[in-house]
Image (cartoon, rainbow, N blue to C red):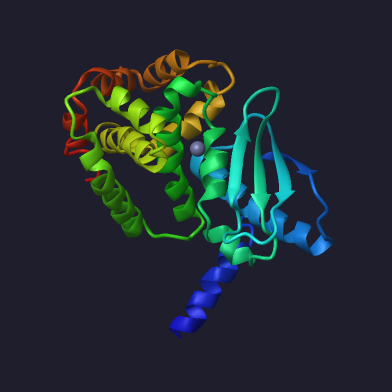
Length: 268
Ligand SMILES: [Zn+2]
């Protein structure tokens, strides 16, 4: 019975729940067979559908560039966003992996979630990567890859793992930039995600919505207006009607990193 229900969930998970509303332009950068293209389209249409349900329909065409990377140890060994001229993602993939292996991979939810906010510049990568790291699991929950309880456990585990790196008197942003300069990318990503965990908790407690609901509203009103980090934060404060985003940001820019990462509201 359990076996059957797992199969059923998997089949449900792969079937598009509703018509995809986002506009996607496909760019096949290498040779792919019809079967391989079908698998890649099923995978990215499913992920994009979950992104739509989680963060809203993006008000622009997304460009997906598909590159072949045979003989890899994982389905998507590399991916990066394109943020100038077009809004898109380059996916370097090994098409020999199964569709389920692609759906279980966090890379596409992470990269596509980056596109829901403007490009913020290299200096703000702690913020942009923290955002995408937080959002990738929200999207994977929508895809049925993890449950809400597992999501909470994953966030708590990630924060516990990075906390020792931020046990410093320097401000959080300075510590993040130093971690990046030492190539401690995963630590920097999950440290940055703590900002969005705290925002999510505050939005639930004080406004009866979660961060993904808020970002869905942002797509409709303001996504195409903002062009910088400052404009984004101003826009979020204005949309919420109070300076929650800028005030928490000040803690990250000025307060000791150790205190920021010890905030009780991170993973409760
Ligand atoms: Zn990223």
